[in-house]
Amino acid sequence: MNRRDLLLAMPWIAATPVLAHHGWSSFDESKPVYLEGKVKSLKWQNPHAEIVVTVALDAKLPADLAKRSVPPQKASVDGARVLAAAALPTRRGDWTLELSPMTRIEAWKVPEPKAGDTVAAVGYTFKDDKGPQFARVEFLFIGSAVFALRSMPA
Image 1 (cartoon, one colour):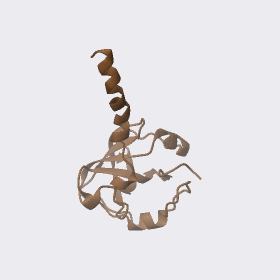
Image 2 (tube, helix red, strand yellow):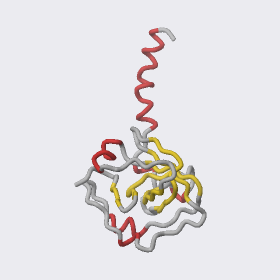
Image 3 (cartoon, helix red, strand yellow):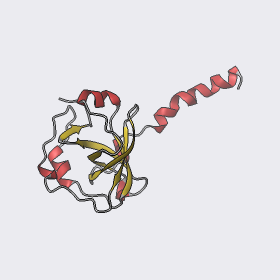
Image 4 (cartoon, one colour):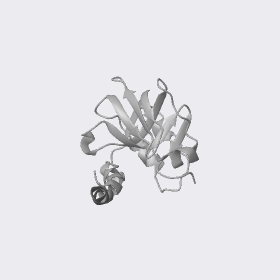
């Protein structure tokens, strides 16, 4: 590629991450899902940390989920409503959990899970639970800790 072609391509190259990035509007926030499983793999890096978990065929919704408390955060999220509305996804197997950018992960002091650890999340997938098995995480549960990932801690 010569210099002129490179200069012509630079605006497209610079815009590519913006085009690939998505916001919350891609996800159905009216139907939160509860996903719990063993960590298969993870990417602990920007632009978003991701955890791949294997959701078991016999997965169950925790009886106390609606009563769990969530930490305050700067975004206005009705955590009690989200937890009370959460249901199991219609599909099992491997799910990619998209977390927040690393600045929020670090602000919440989220510990990096390891392969084989069990984690749970309440988040949002695509309309009618169609498309890839991918969820944008609102609340992440690791051990007895819960992390609210929509924004920074309050």
